[in-house]
Length: 271
Image 1 (cartoon, helix red, strand yellow):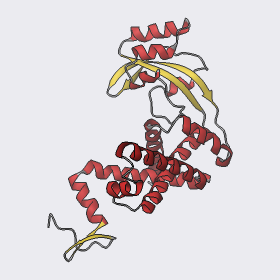
Image 2 (tube, rainbow, N blue to C red; image 1 turned 45 degrees about the vertical axis):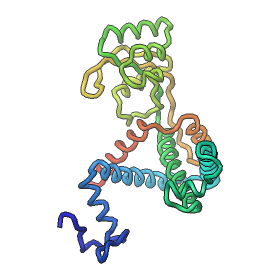
Image 3 (cartoon, rainbow, N blue to C red; image 1 turned 180 degrees about the horizontal axis):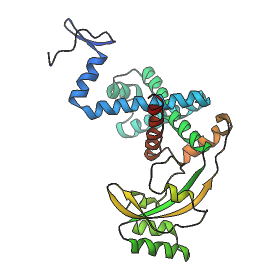
Image 4 (cartoon, one colour; image 1 turned 30 degrees about the horizontal axis):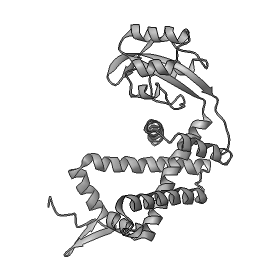
């Protein structure tokens, strides 16, 4: 009974072994015991999709089919060119797709367009909701030593470039990009938020203590710009968001912040 699937499940059948029927719930139950992190990741992805779908419906956000087609066609051409270049002209795209994915070319093309739409919706929703709020964009630096943090502040106030100093001294992975963070609102889960909103454009903060992981560190923030929220319909800013996503794709930090904020609010509303 530990190995055989439950016989009373009634959801969709996915396979048969003799007279035993395997169903979707059996697959998830087995995955949960064999690879619990993978199973929970799948659940998190479903929750994320539901959050995005709710906001898309609430604000009338829709993906333009012509943009889906343009992006999917461009990706298909890129893959076809890569197959021809790396595997030779004897292997066409149809054969490659069948060998790699076990799919007919028409089915793969349909799946590619669905995946493209699924990638576009989170970008539209997250960037549109951010655009409606007051936001700030900053560079920041983190260091164990207060003396180093104060030296950075003094140098910036004397005209030094903050990004260069962050690259040299910061202990956060963002140092590689000069400590740059994407524009964020007050719901952003980061130690610099309160200080950042109190800075004028071009100003640098005094060093202050905050937590990085499980440790207290000294932070310094440099304000690049304050961005007032704009209460506009999605259709009015769709092209702007498209250009922004092309230039700066959605980051993991933005996605995680969105999920934590809105999942928490929905859970609270359901209590």
